[in-house]
Length: 116
Image (cartoon, rainbow, N blue to C red; front, side, top):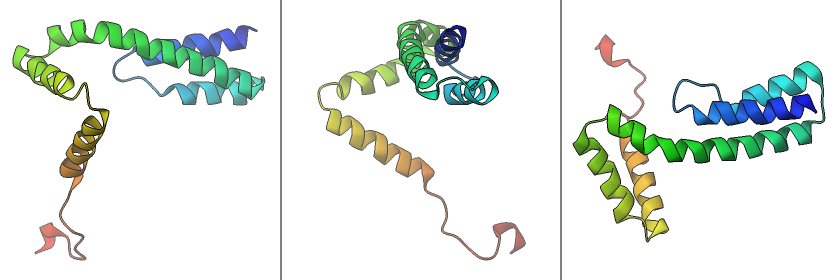
């Protein structure tokens, strides 16, 4: 029973940390491999801990970002959030297009650019 609580607590703690934390599944996999408990129970406890941890993260992250980022950066992010709040399809299209736009690179060339 202690392992299931440890899986819950580890996932909750890791998903509450905003940056520089390992993914929760690596900790759950370590618990499963090291002590050989029921994997489905560990996954269930870890999933519940992750959901609660992410919820806690969403509660305190706006206050933390207000201290870290400049005011205009927060205003910019909140504008996009409010602008696309009613239309989830628009939000998805915007997110996908921004990811595609920023991930485009130069087409593959067999000759490296530094070798010209």
